[in-house]
Length: 369
Figure 1: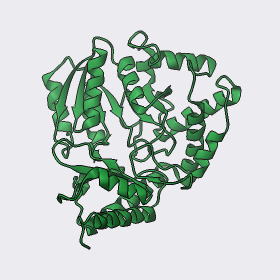
Figure 2: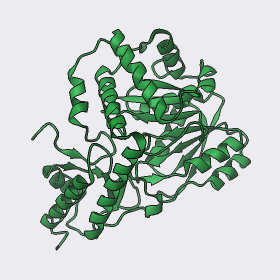
Figure 3: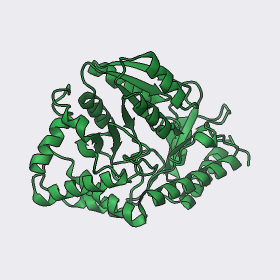
């Protein structure tokens, strides 16, 4: 099997380009000037994607995206603050769990997994509870692929004078967010998603004023974004051992991102991937869990075939043997599986993947065609 195979149709880690993988073949000294320049360039390019250089700092952090979410909550929400967590999937629930573990007061508002939170919901909740200081929203909920209406929700939160924390893990780099038009205290993302880097680094775009007043909030030494930013601004270095190869890979991935045409081009390709996937799966009679109007072109959830011969583990292994890695469903009420539309893949490869899925379902005697 070649180094590029199999193709990952998952929401991250995902398929990366040969150039991105090649960038990890060089070892870097963590205090070396060239590596510090790499980090600075990375943060500058990331800020440009959200048009945030004037208002926000980009604070990188070692670890997965969840590390960065926990760091953002722990640093930017004061210990006497209260977070309203908007939930319509597993990652909203995880964010609430983070608040619980950190000892931050929080309340939750949960809708069905195929139902977006609305601005009217948020308006009503904020009117009812004056103690809320922050609202946490998952932009694109990876457990289904549902897109929540960020601009409308952000506007309501700003009208109430509250602060918004956005988990944009699955959307950053592919779905537009302009920091000058959508007010937020923090937007959180990671290296191994729509930027097509490798996993291992999260980053938080923190509003400058909010970060400046966050000293002493954090529950953790390692996850203190205030300290991380202060040290990096002063020295150009990471406080603790950085994920050097991950940084180098992401820097190379960003060069390719800009060569491709930046966010509009990345979004266009992912939309084409998603459309190809939906069309071909529809021909097999496999139904999407979400209606098209709220389906983000990031990851798609499909109802599992209602056939006693279908079992996800067997299905997964057979599709994997044909060169494609899928993702299990994360819903509690119905059996599903997920197919990612992101990564270094094209619509033609999405169609080939569905052809492999069709072959497998015929082999399992689930499909007769």
